Amino acid sequence: MHQLSLEKDKIKILLLEGVDPSAVDALGKAGYTNVEYERGALDPRELMERIEGVHFIGIRSRTKLTAEVLARARRLVGIGCFCIGTNQVDLDAAARQGIPVFNAPYSNTRSVAELVTGEYLALLRDLPARNRLVHNGGWKKTAGGCFEARGKTLGIIGYGHIGTQVGIIAESLGLEVIFYDIENKLALGNARQVETLQELFARADIVTLHVPETPETKGMIGAGEFAAMRDHVFFLNASRGSVVDVDALGAALESGKVAGAALDVHPVEPKSNDDEFVSPLRKFDNVILTPHIGAATEEAQRNIGIEVANKLALFSDNGSTLTAVNFPEVALPRMRSDVSRLLHIHRNVAGIMRRINEIFSDENINVAAQYLQTTPEVGYVVMDINSSAPEELVPRLKAIDGTLKCRILY
Ligand code: NAI
Image (cartoon, rainbow, N blue to C red; front, side):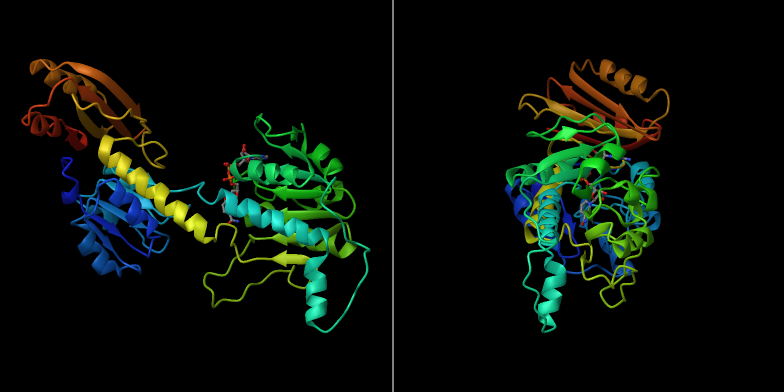
């Protein structure tokens, strides 16, 4: 439990694992300059020691914020994962301590879309096989099996952040775009949503996958789906390795049903750069295999740095938890200069709001606005007060049974 005032230089921020320096710049622009920056991850003992003194911590995937580590983080008010995944953090333990966790799920959208675009253009021109052939001293100067993208039909499965970007780039190249999504989506440009996967398979010259990993998408593309696709289709997967049965894809490549494929994600990916990549698809010259680098661009890293830093700064400045992955999401207007704002994070048990309101009414405090969101575990209430809140309010609010954190912004 800790109160943070808005003396920004007192707010300590620890950034680990060499997060992009754009994060430091973004925090600095927001007034947060008390930043310690480490290029690597800390060993567990040092992490335990250093997390004790900080209000915010920024990590990537190597720092494990377990319940044990978080128990030491008595001052911590927010966690930034400068990446997409958040399973390196015990999200429930963080929520139980009243700590929101933020990440950057969409900063790399454009990078993935550009990779996919480059790959289907390369596949259409048989570049992977011809490149390898020429490197090996061969020569195959024929037009057979090589195509322009213009006029072809691109079938996008999963028309979300990445799928839509892939679609608009494709349209500007002159492809016709159709997509399948479980939700009704507003089509960008002239793209058309189709009702069924079967319809997409029947029409698409190129099929590209942009779905999340869910129980429904696991093994979503197997032998039956490849059989339903057009002959000599080009197939791409930059979503998740579990979505495609790679043995079935291998069989479809063997038979010529699939004319070429590009895979950035794989059912089994090496844990480190020193481990061998194993896949039945390695033997195919007409398959582009990449090591899960869809998001690996300098621009994406920079965008991630800015996005997560801004989320931490916003939470610190005005209490907004929009897009937090483990926490009630409260989107708050900018604080007016003539109000103070109470942020109260508590276990989601009955009676807490009544206690808060009692304290306010005892003190004759007029509430200008109130925002409340809950998850099954945690409640988060934000109240704007038409005056500066008396200091003695804070200990009384903290004393309410079930309070996890309380702070007042002036
Ligand atoms: P998103 O959440 O914006 O879009 C996903 C879309 O798929 C949504 O429109 C959703 O309605 C749709 N969808 C969900 N289940 C479906 C189903 N069963 N059938 C058809 N559509 C379905 O996600 P975003 O950002 O576009 O990412 C898509 C995928 O790309 C994710 O799997 C993500 O993990 C992966 N990804 C891969 C990267 C790489 O390095 N290769 C980098 C970033 C994301």
